[in-house]
Length: 112
Image (tube, rainbow, N blue to C red):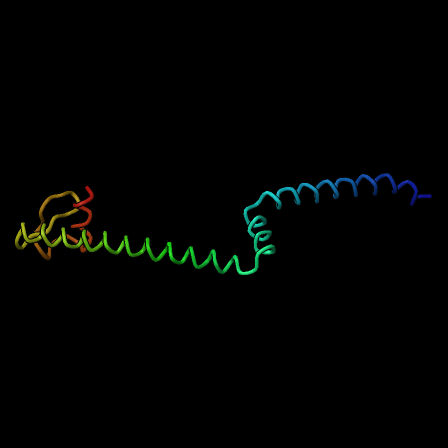
């Protein structure tokens, strides 16, 4: 008889679990990872294509950043030539070479 009494509780518990699973599936289907998985299931090799495109974009961005760094380095050389024996600090004030200044001071001064 006690088993019959537990049936409504079991039924309610199962309903709550089913609702939780349905909600989780909804969240999964809305995620970008699920969309990517669906695309990869329909078209073999799409992940490799996407990875190659991303690698190209990162290489391009890296080259652009390298160029910016070289330009900033060249500007540092010009600034240091303008201040013989001195280096610009983070505040823009000239400091004696070998003093408190650090390697990044010229770049900091450029962007101040």
